Length: 274
Image (cartoon, rainbow, N blue to C red; front, side, top):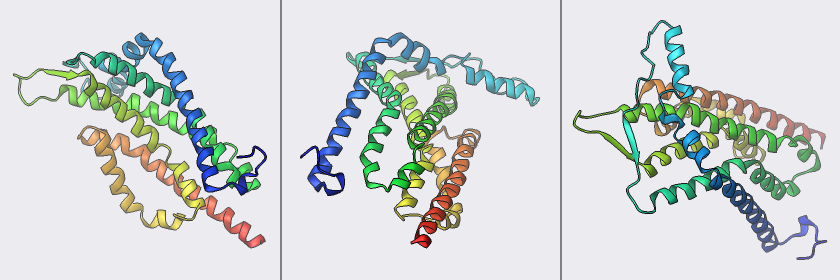
């Protein structure tokens, strides 16, 4: 493909080639950050991954303080988390180290991944649309990181506390496999990060005409059911945890309706001028 060939004249194969290089650069960025994360193993595992396993983790202290403030005594305070984490396969710890580093690489390199995504789609937008979406990379990255933090500080501790203390018999002691523990944390963090991208997803779906603000409003009740179902999937099966997780998702849904309305109004204004 000629370097001077305009993007609007690119063939389908040229677009695939362009996409391939955006993906390659994104993967390289993830691997570079993953190598750094691999080196800082002690901090990644002892401080970050195993932080929610400690009874003095900041989230547990928050819940305890809130419980005491509301006059509930120590009902939400954590005395202990009666379980151990073990590795039962020869390559278990190395595999966990490797894949956790890659996960850290993806999370920390997310702004660059979004940047590459934006470089790929922006040539297909009008100049005015590109100007209106200048903050796309910042907003998308901010929402993702807020979601990751929500998953780490709220969803993960709730899940670990519930499942770590759950017992069907005093004869059974919880010995969780390392991969199971990391899998729970990974699912909580990534699920929350992706869910918090809802306004961005709604923005693009509205731009291409797949959804409208009226559609979102009319299906609010259905969305509520879906939100509660989603909360039940990514949190332990207790009502308090599901309510805590549902609140920000419902707020994001309402924000998404507002964004969809703004996008639709701007599109109508453009059509009227034509």
